[in-house]
Image 1 (cartoon, one colour):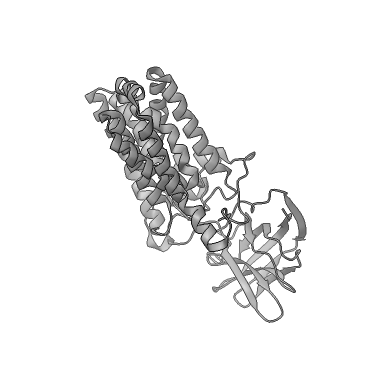
Image 2: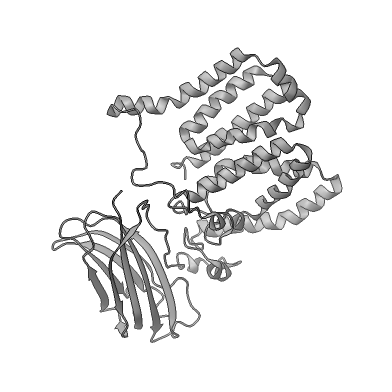
Length: 403
């Protein structure tokens, strides 16, 4: 999406690394100043991307002698000017904040933050829901490339290792480690050029024949990834709620009738540095039959003014084949006169070959804080013809502790 920063960060980081390489390869001090300006823009667009500085020493690996020469002849006045350029560009943001609000620092993501001690490292890297290498397996070639660098330039390889560790830690520690709707985890897009550089080091070490065989092996993975990207655009891949079962269901499928058919919802908890308070819960163990003219509704009175996290599970069975195809779970914030917010999703995680059998579904999702006299209402309804049964419904509502 053009409104998101990641595509611009990718371009800026790519240009920054190119100018840094020009500095190392050609002893071009003007390239150093251009790199400094680009670094300022990188930080201005997404401050956490400043970690790309750790990759700079590795850029000189192809010209190690020239790199040492540059350090010996480095004009410290040029370096001071470069630092001044970077700082002056980064300073644009606090200056704008001060002119607009009278304070130098404004927290742009109020109510959001990092869970530094509980990063979702495995899910972020390998998970079927959003994992980087699950969606883009070709990037795993960076691992042997990094091993090769350790045998050639240990110090630079260590810095690159630190860079990758920080990248994964920062990305997976954000409270909403899913980062919303996207094909894979979009924050990694900013740094693809560094992955590509490490992979290029690996390819450079191969013979011509080995390189050709490597391309032959990699090509099917690239084709599959391109096909998956098309599936995402066509609505066959859920934008944030994938799992292994869903991947097996949509594998190699292009039927337009499956557009938007993957449902369910399992979101991470809201940012809560002081934890979540159990606010309310209920269990409806008996069987409820739901048709097009009926619905099941449960109302709650959670604490006012706190963001909510709802965990829900149920068993469902259709009376006739396909009756649960369009069934929905919906959550509403209502008062005596109106409905302020409605959030819903398909009850079935995916279309079932035979939904006449009992099936267990689990959900987790966030809702905004209730206002005065508002209730939180959860309902299960049938927008299409057909009847189905639900039972063993369990709902647990938790509220963000003040912080």
